[in-house]
Length: 199
Length: 138
Image (cartoon, rainbow over all chains, first blue to last red; front, side, top):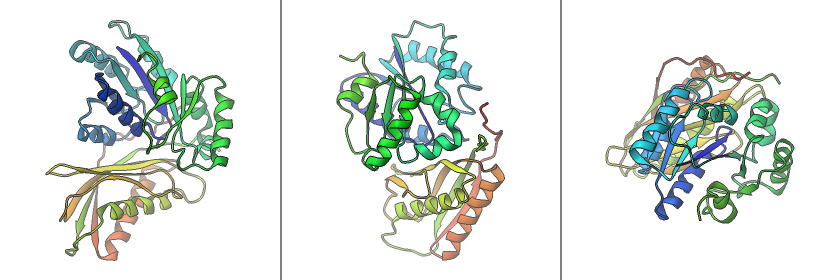
């Protein structure tokens, strides 16, 4: 069972990316489960994914990094035992720090995960403004990412893209940085970056 | 700017057509509401929208999802209300850094009132209340 943590600020495109990835992998015959952690009393993204017939489990009532570690670990156990997916996608809240989520996985005592990776999405239309307001959070998200995904590239100007790239590289100099947009299929570098274990 | 608080707000917005209106574009109605709300939530540079997003599902199948992340950007809408739809329940999550829960309540109520007074669609707000402790990372 592989695990992919998808993190990034609120509204940056995590859910859109995840839905595309699940649909892409589904066409290849892979079993994918999604654990969604949302802030708010009702899981809107969770409901949307159910509408799309995706295998989604909901972690509600708080943020994984603060309050839901036990729920996360329990769900991973159940997924492994009952569904045995090829991939578990964990969608963190936009206010979550990936390192806290990954720390929680240290307590996972099921079968060892085949791989654990973190993909962080950034919105070039808003990143500079967001960094001014919640800079430490953004740095905590971008810094440990294994893969950085700049979303909405069909909407961003070259200047916005360049400025966001500079900000991102100031926080993470080494992770691959790829582009994505809602209108494009997952392909090439983006797909390989998300599921490097897939031949 | 000191790191801002985040007090999540969730509500069901009950939309109801006040007059039969063939071909009403519900997507445009919902998008307009969210865009108007976004304008109210990020005014003086002291707050920033995380996201304002919501979903309506329909008894016969189908959904309408809308999401707005900044006052300068149009809402992103997916799905479609069924033909002849006269009312819908749209569940919305409003996450705005720098606004208290009470401030969000006031803004949602204000927007609902503005839309309703226009005379085409009435919006009733049903907050979903639970522990809404501020989400504040140190």
